[in-house]
Length: 318
Image 1 (cartoon, rainbow, N blue to C red):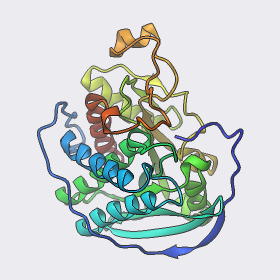
Image 2: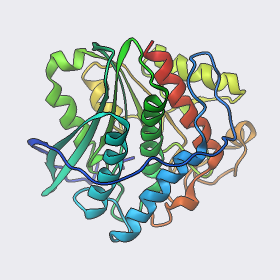
Image 3: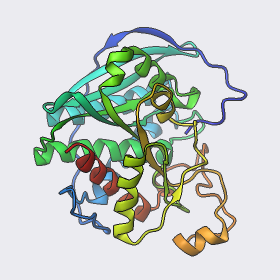
Image 4: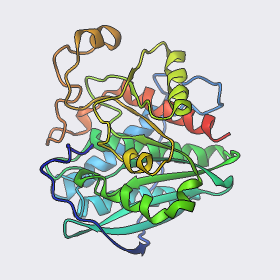
């Protein structure tokens, strides 16, 4: 998740569309701690699958100066890893190139064959970290969850009525540059085909809350119904309003929604009574810091939120 826009210098220029390739393999599986409701026939995805992707992103950061930031080798390696997983699973992938702050950035778009191309259900997350750390919660957590949801679609052979599209955005930390470029590139006709965009930015915070975007009523209800089925109370998400990649879609009139587990706001006593955790401490004490590693993830929050993503994708794409 990006910082507030004040104090940031942003540049973005359109360049072209490119295609990258690299090796990779689908992560292994293990039993999950939390089961999703079965109403939408979505799979219960093992949390070990998500954590395997996070371990890969951590290794990539470690091998590339400790970060996966825009325009740095760690970002390109992260994109190559995700793309290879998707290509092997049968997705049609496109790498979209843009420029920001004097460096080349990339978005990765993956389409699952089939479904009504005039009704696209899309989910996305930003893949870049800040330059000061590996960005495993922010936003390896969302990126891994979107990736594993896409792979679950492929493993199940899911063929919904609507078309499924998945995205990983570049240069979010510089001001939503990649997602804004993508939305602008669609034109009005392309934007009209997206029936909903779901955004996931920080879903494994170590002192977690369970926050649901309140932008589109249908998407909001879908997530609330899921958590109600688990007996987990939710709150409306306010900390990240306008600070993540749903904003360009929302500003263009696309229905949006998403989940969030908290950044540098501090947990109140009322929130701790609902969710557990530590009163008076940030939801993520390592937000935008070098300690945002694989040790900075709450497995229960990651599992619940990740299964909620799969549930929503199955439900909303019928």
